[in-house]
Image (cartoon, rainbow, N blue to C red):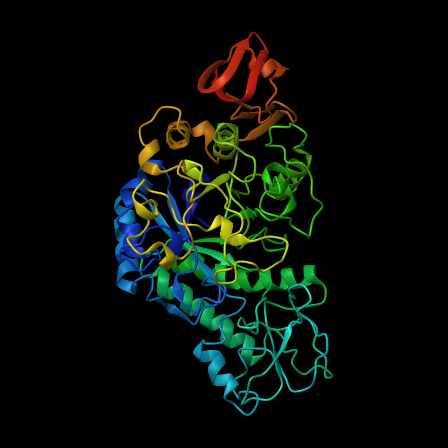
Length: 533
């Protein structure tokens, strides 16, 4: 793997249907993004990650693909995407696409062909079918919903899904086969081999057109097994084969998984791990439960909260593990994403964002900035269940997917469509943050983000290659970058102080509310600072 650029990069995640609408249909599109490239460049980011933009019936917001090689008409055309890649490149920005390979839409021609068949294909089935009642079965169940779906015919039997019924699981094989369960193809059976070949064709199609790489959804759920860890490891072997090809055909191509890559012999196939917003380490820092509850881990008070009742223990333990097997293993750390909440959620106020962004942009990770977080857009509770946003009754993802707020014109400048025609409602608050209101304004969230990313770009010690050493885990949280720059944040409302030898001789390069006296730091509530000698 030689995509060294990623290690020091800042990624900007664009949810395309909510970013900028160029044709007035109420849904964001690629030409809308093209029109905002100068703005995106002004943030100081290095890559744009797009959520799925391929042809889809949008049962799950595009994570149900019907054609991997064609842009969804609501977003534009393939030519629009290629123009976006070219024009972004002129501004020094690469483009990453979201690739969903664990399943397709039921509308994909592959599935329609197998659905119309009398039985298994002589070439090997691309999906997982059984003619006998599987009962409770096996799979990735939504709460109370079985993983096997009765075939709507003509083909008899059942098919295995991932998540919604409209997302049939692609067949990459099973670790353990069983004559009594004939749907369990081995990993080298014809069906799985067809899908591995198709995966390479999809990657080749877009990489040869200038796309820089992919964030891969459900990357380690391809091969099935009752032992999830064994399944993840076998799935990693699929990607090892892909990586060997990429290293020759597209050595600069980037692959980023959804989550962390299993540690297996033979090294890594992906260029980074991804510390997911919905998992405990990230949630322990930022999840204030304003968007609901994540039912798969124990709720706790977040560290970045005014009460100051949180801890960095869970995050730092995960960080240490992710980095332990390879000293410079990159880790993507997001402000938020499309799958849960926003950085500004619940009771979190704009004045609390400075400490959070200082951490996110100076920690030894690859920052991923979710669209709208740079102006402090709010998570909006009570949004309608659009395109499968409520996949679990405990939370609603739509509140993190509302239209980008550009200015104070109707629909916050997102679209000229009627309000009722928008993909999702715009924040109704008359005082909602906008790009126009914050542009060039000292102290605004947008100005803070631009200043901080400019400082990161100008200071190699704050980028991804420099080592990170924690000097204090509590309030204030303090760490050393490159042994030359000390960063300190105090996310709570009450002031905090710290005396460490690393502070001696330091001065504040950038920040707010930080005072240095000899080896002592006094940090105001919600204060933050980057210091150097």
